[in-house]
Length: 84
Image (cartoon, rainbow, N blue to C red; front, side, top):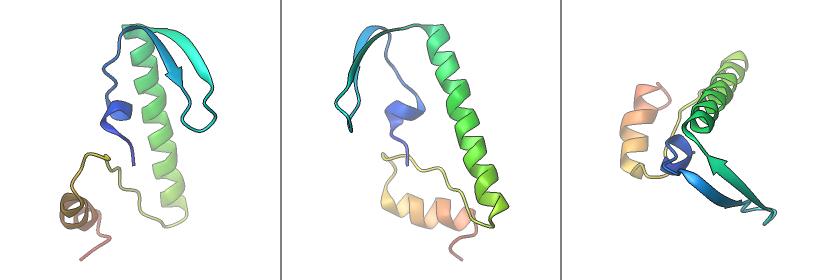
């Protein structure tokens, strides 16, 4: 499950990121090049998870935290063949 902000970040310029688990803060400058690199690495991460799931006979369904539960169950899980 990824948030809309993780799937398509809409930040630019100087920002202070705070890790929600460790509370560690980091100041960064977000540029279009950095966002392209982020998208590339996110896509590689997702591809690796899909490959790993496939290797072990599991399903992978990418879900956004903004999706309604009905959409997840009746559309995405059905389309993936998890629910008939």
